[in-house]
Image 1 (cartoon, rainbow, N blue to C red):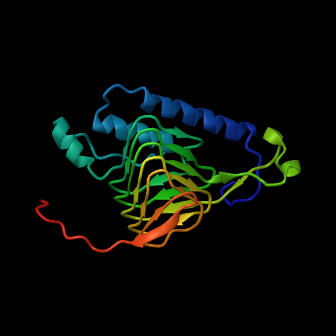
Image 2 (cartoon, one colour):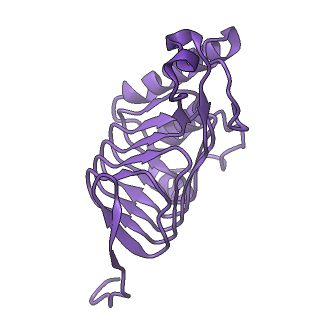
Image 3 (cartoon, rainbow, N blue to C red):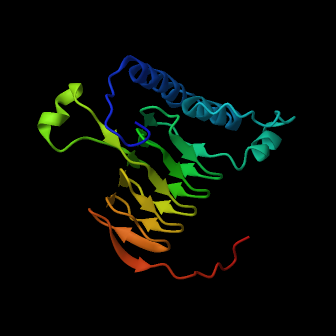
Length: 205
């Protein structure tokens, strides 16, 4: 599966992995005003990241500061496996995201995304005789989103796509091919609209 070869998704081990991911996602989706630490802990449960967190600080404000670089993932998440999703430092994932993480989905540091973004690293054979409903094999390709990108609400990224550093994907776009660094893409399929020029930040702290 991870190599992008044909594989069967309804084997007992993969079916069990998906059930465990559903339970972990439900834990985040039903959390009522979780603390920053609780949010991070649940996300790491979804992705099966066992790296220890920094020890808890004396106050909630100090604890939030300790975890400032950890990704923020809002409620409404749906993932297949979870353990193939990798978020960099200071990534923001808005509500109702979907992760078909057949193959690795890697999001670079400081990338932000609007609500309803979907990442489909899994795909199926085109020939229906091979596809064969739930009894046939599936396949997939990795997705890579570079650092400092911005994905608008409702963006869909398909298997095998790489989005270059600093690029912007307009809301509702479907990204079917690689995106260069530092451009704006929009549409279905997404096409380059313009190159991003350096903006002067006035009055920003």
